[in-house]
Length: 357
Ligand SMILES: NC(=O)C1=CN([C@@H]2O[C@H](COP(=O)(O)OP(=O)(O)OC[C@H]3O[C@@H](n4cnc5c(N)ncnc54)[C@H](OP(=O)(O)O)[C@@H]3O)[C@@H](O)[C@H]2O)C=CC1
Ligand SMILES: O=C/C=C/c1ccc(O)c(O)c1
Ligand SMILES: [Zn+2]
Ligand SMILES: [Zn+2]
Picture 1 (tube, helix red, strand yellow):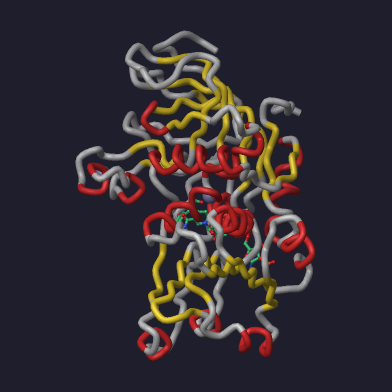
Picture 2 (cartoon, rainbow, N blue to C red; picture 1 turned 120 degrees about the vertical axis):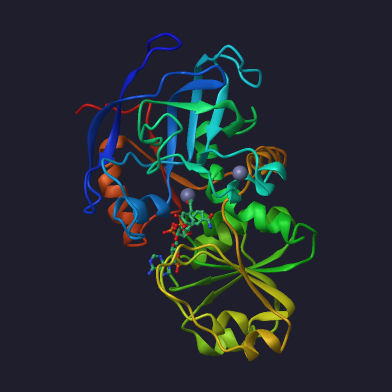
């Protein structure tokens, strides 16, 4: 590491084209400004969005691209005006590393909805440099976009909370779904979905997992604490659950019909879409009218909500269920994520990996 004001050369693992195959890539971090924090990356979760982005599913990918937005690191340098953090703190960075600070969403501490937000990778920083993510030895992050990892949370366990956990916590809070006694549905039991089960259970909800297969039934019930498990193709089971749920967290990352899930909602129930899907979805209007149901969406959460969610998880003993791997397994991890073969989040032990094999 160099000193403040100097550019530092780091190694990350980057996708070079839409094959998404990652390989070692050297680049320089931007110069550390007064509000910036240099972090040594310890662990980074592997989100399905990383797969969408490295494979150009959304048609907006720029290469070389170092993915990773569930980043837990150790502070190794702080700029002169950094007040929130000091060297040796364990911190987290997520999907957003910049915003305009002037618009209505920014002023309301909902900077994730800022139209000038800066993504932690596949974007351009204010100095014109490409942003690169947490599959790398180090990052420079403005202190505004970092959170403290509470002492009660293991850093590798905390990584998936920074996107997957936040993505379910934020809509639960925003839509008034944090009280006890609600009946929740979680559609798609992957990285985001398993945090949906854990957080909804921690809030005292009755949780039904709705999955595409029977394969995850025992784990969902025995390890994650789900109260019920339905396979979406089981028409009788789905019909028996009609009008029973207050909300559904829909995490499916591919086209799927909405009507079977709208049917499961009670009066005023909410279908909360979280998956990134690059095709139009369909439903018939009576499916929402007859029951005053809502179809809505939500995008990650704010920095403030991230800190609050981490404290909630530490206090309630909520952790993620992870498979810890080294960086040389990243390409295999992406393949397994694509074929729905992960329980439930890969986390890369970045600091424990040889980044130049
Ligand atoms: N809104 C936001 O802010 C965020 C959005 N996302 C998006 O949410 C989606 C889910 O992310 P994540 O949980 O990391 O993904 P995972 O791949 O870990 O989980 C997705 C789950 O959806 C189910 N599924 C159903 N159909 C498919 C399919 N065709 N391909 C793959 N999975 C399928 C599977 O569950 P089962 O076996 O139970 O059927 C799978 O485990 C992604 O689109 C991601 O980009 C992620 C984070 C933040
Ligand atoms: O995983 C976090 C990011 C999710 C995301 C949601 C929506 C969208 O258009 C994206 O490009 C990413
Ligand atoms: Zn994510
Ligand atoms: Zn803004």
